Image (cartoon, rainbow, N blue to C red; front, side, top):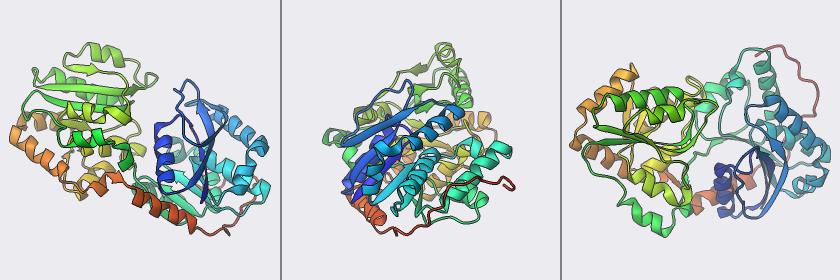
Length: 394
């Protein structure tokens, strides 16, 4: 089966993981998309084509590049004509997929893969209304909607759109094939001593100012009984004081970026607890998503710390594990660690270790099932021709 995958960032590690997943399902994959400015280039196996460069946080520039990608699509539109299905990752790629499909008069089904809900999509101003009207119209031509969290459906899609295509949940789980023999051997050995100092790991994209301040205050007030290790990519445009806060907080360290392919057992094996809390888009995307670190840390027995009232907390509740916080976080977080004992930690870690592998990991079998779902999509999805979108209602 031939799958054309249109992606917003060819250098995104999550894109690389999804490509691997599709190939494990026996899809013949072509990958076309944008490069992000200053991104570290990553090589994707198989056919790959860059159709432009976009920049984080620059909506107008991305809109212009998206339009140009449609205008200049002749050099790659054959890939769409030859495809059995097109998967568009993000709204801008969905625009490109459907306009080019209309242009070449293809009946190929188009799938919209939505991994995040950008805050602009929820705004009640004119820009938010326009973007939702655009998305609503494009969804009429989609054969399938993929979401990484079920909360995206009831909190956003069902709220703002009268009708939706069929949708499926595809969480941001680890791939079984990512865990090489050496890494698997380290799973049972991961984990540190069950005594203070308690170490909290905050890994991935570091962009939450409140998390930084909460963790720094917790470490400073702990008299050496709590440490925080940070690894990943700090968003300095959001956290301009990141390095200053870390330097001013004995017991808080930043170890730089890490390689998911090799470093997960090491970084999670050094800490007791996994910081799975984020306020970057509080009440919106941050409350709805299921982060990569939830699956990564849990695979290596690292106990998640999460808010009870958000989707991550609900996921942990369903699976009977994790430590959940509510109320005034400054107080409840401190109280949790004042009360923490070795036996409490061992019990929490035991619940994480006992999770079914299927809750955290995709296999070649689940990849094949997903690709089979794509293969069964009808090729008769109505093509909504492009026209001006009236802005009347939300």
